[in-house]
Image (cartoon, rainbow, N blue to C red; front, side):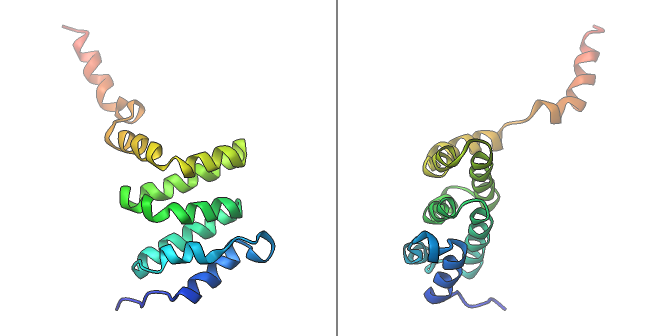
Length: 139
């Protein structure tokens, strides 16, 4: 049986914890307003990723949450998760500004992600291609 969607108060309570709103003064209501109209599974998906991103940086998690619906409209959940993790990786390696750039430049990420999803990686196909190419050299 499908679980009922979360209420605005439940979403805000979760986001307040993730954003550490008591100290960061981030307004969870803005993000909650975007999440409230989604199905329970989408709400859970966004809140779970928000929790994971907030372990890295609360502001990054807030910006992710504000853009998550647009991301889900453009990509599947696996790609949205990869987008969020790319942002956290950038935060770990380069700092907040490059991580925010990943979040804010969603269209660029979507374009690149679709190209990567449709392409083939040479290393993965090498076991098939190498014997074929070696066989051609004998002709």
